[in-house]
Amino acid sequence: MKTFESKLIVIAKSKQEIFTFLSDFRNFEKLMPKEVSKWSAQEGSCSFTISNMAELNMKFGDCVEFSNINIISSGRNPFNYNLKLNIIEIDSNSSQFSAIFEADLNPMIAMMASRPLTNFVDTLGDKLQEVLS
Image 1: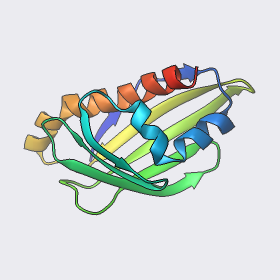
Image 2: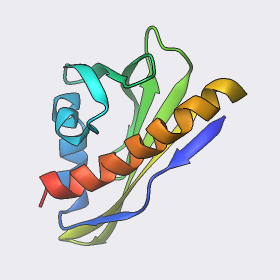
Image 3: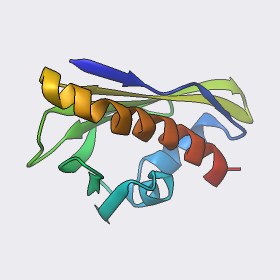
């Protein structure tokens, strides 16, 4: 498994507010990098294409209320993966957010996908901070 970790982001919202926002894929469109196209979402699943990569389909996996959201590959995907969204309470009005994307990539795909996937997880945090400000 190849791992892509976002930087840690501090968001001026409670862990409950962040978790609630991230618990609906329809909100994720606001968090996507510009390289994402063909966005489609329902509350519990979504699909999109990252430029120069294949279409990704995902759905919610196991979650720990107000602290962790696990998103897993679903349906047709070029590789298996999971996306872990972590929320750590700093105080009642601020939280720390990070995203970890783990993918089962062969070496050639890992080389091609490294930059887009790193950008993807970093952009999730940056845009989440922007949208919830």
